[in-house]
Amino acid sequence: MKVTDLVTEFAKPIVESFGCTLWDVEYVREGSERYLRVYIDKDGGVDIDDCEKIHRAMDPVLDEKDPIAENYHFEVSSAGLERALKRPGDFERFMGSPVLVKLYRPRNGLKEIPGFLRGYEDGKVTVEAGKETITFEKSQVALVRLRVEF
Image 1 (cartoon, rainbow, N blue to C red):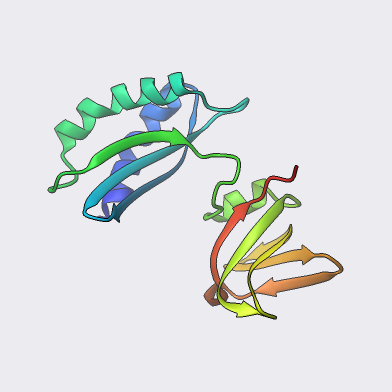
Image 2: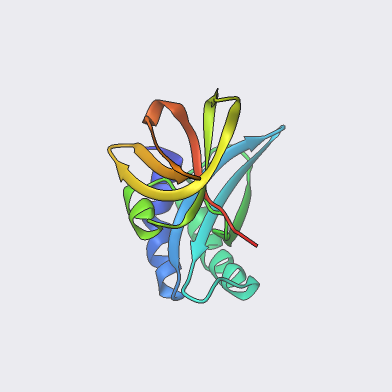
């Protein structure tokens, strides 16, 4: 079982016990350091107190379960306003919202396409970009994230 799946399994009930939802878990290497990050969400937004309480509650569980052999930094943070959409439920929840689609290869000279989320099916993402509606194949899309408009 992957580290992120294992951590998700025991983090979800802890996060939910504080009135939040578990948005994502990532385990990444940045330079020579490794980071385990738990992203949380809550109606009305997440604040530093939410992150601190969940961090304190998860710390002893991480020590007990010991899902990662090497040294790492553990962080709990808000999913953020410009969060990545990964699961089908994420796309359903934010249908019609402004998004930014990042592509592996440029399309008409652009690797980032801003638009409004209009569809999601089997990994295919449809956005309305200006007067054009574009459907991207899963293999074309590096990332889809919410876009905040000012």
